[in-house]
Length: 373
Ligand code: F3S
Image (cartoon, rainbow, N blue to C red; front, top):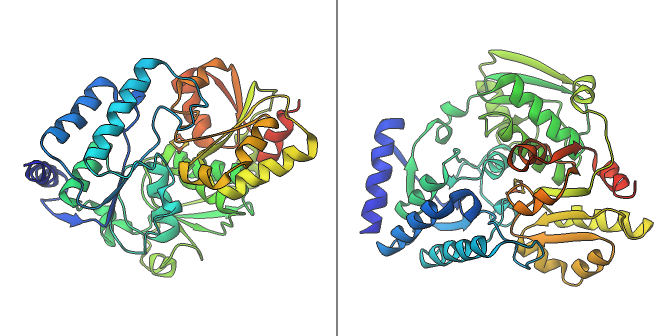
């Protein structure tokens, strides 16, 4: 019954947005699983699907929740209970509750395979750096798609819909994580929509690729960019490009975007979730100086957290608080601070809006320095 319900719903949406065409997907990744964002109505919708006997028909993972897995960030009882019901419903449907916004860490999406993902940074990452195809599916649509096994065939699931529309020359770099985020934000703000083709972009490391993907999709509706020499099939995209817009992002543009830095209450790294290299880098920097004066929060995926073992305890003695499964953007824990320094342009966009906390964007090195200011 649930399968029929999901199939019918997707076909009806497809009638409106993709002339009735649908595309089968290999995996799904659902958002809207935090009690803080979906509230009571969202939980009831999930429980309604469970009551119909809903089960996902493709491998399906889930986004961060309102609570961290180790209970490092304190949270009220009502949110805890709501989150417990959400997890229960997701498990009943067969969802792998990885509580991560970087599912690409371990789902090695192959080029030109189809996916129904709902977390914008992750969609942009697999589209851009793997040429694996996903549109930005709203959370409920991704879940219904996971149950049905297909989603509407919107333009990003077609080669034609992925034709680059803007030629973007990057005259700055190699890009560190902050610069990569600023470049993503600037392209997003200047173009708004379409498919950018980036020439001359060099990302310094994995973290900078994540920050670029997160910022591009935060500051615009775009979830796909072609990066010359990096995106699989980039040459094919270059030849099919229809470059209506041409823009250049210079070192000055990046510098102008960043304001003065000031001393924060706390430092935050890990939006999108930090990879092991980033965590180890922060640990090494802090070890050289001794315990930080201000707390350094790092959010990461539960599976990365488990790999850290005893390192998380070592970190906490240095005033580095590593937590897993949620982040300072979606957690109300953030409201205890007046200002936070971060190298994430996505966090810089959302934290002031959601929590009225000031954000100071800074390079990772500077963020660490500020923790001792
Ligand atoms: Fe992930 Fe939270 Fe940022 S879900 S992308 S760390 S806003």
